[in-house]
Image 1 (cartoon, helix red, strand yellow):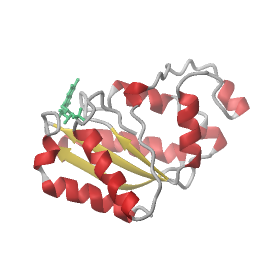
Image 2: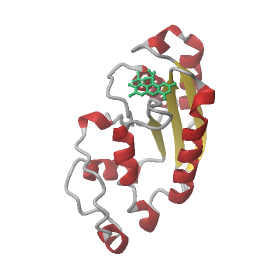
Image 3: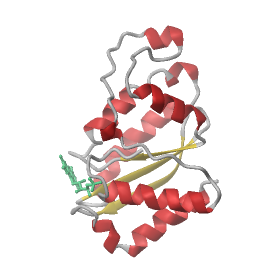
Image 4: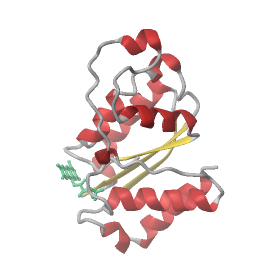
Length: 172
Ligand SMILES: Cc1cc2nc3c(=O)[nH]c(=O)nc-3n(C[C@H](O)[C@H](O)[C@H](O)COP(=O)(O)O)c2cc1C
């Protein structure tokens, strides 16, 4: 999942490389641009806690289907104000049904975070995702934090691209 509004931005390119590596290992992959999806805010109606699914009829329904059938989920977000992008936060809030239906339990998660300042600046966000994944039963298997500012800047970083590719290859 690409949680940046910039297509062919750093998040997008790094996620692409991971998918390329995964495809090379025979995985079938789907990329979702969160900014292309209508994701309404969680209304805290609590229906999901009884019905084990979200009854809001928006773009999340197809995302739920994808998540349900995935073995590995890549969460790609640029670092925004030391946190995740707004669209990624909308998605995370809407993952509440999974706290009761446990459908994500045991699946692998990969975190991809480009930022101006690099790995150190991502510390708090990594901790936050760790807490979120714990609650969902997701296993965080790889973290890729890359220092990059301009759109597409990671293309000038062969080491970062190689690392992303190798992460993808290792995911099977
Ligand atoms: C609204 C906004 C907030 C940002 N906040 C931070 C920040 O707190 N720390 C940081 O290092 N970079 C910050 N950045 C820079 C982005 O994380 C960086 O440019 C990243 O490479 C963008 O990824 P993208 O190309 O996938 O959109 C911010 C950028 C924007 C637009």
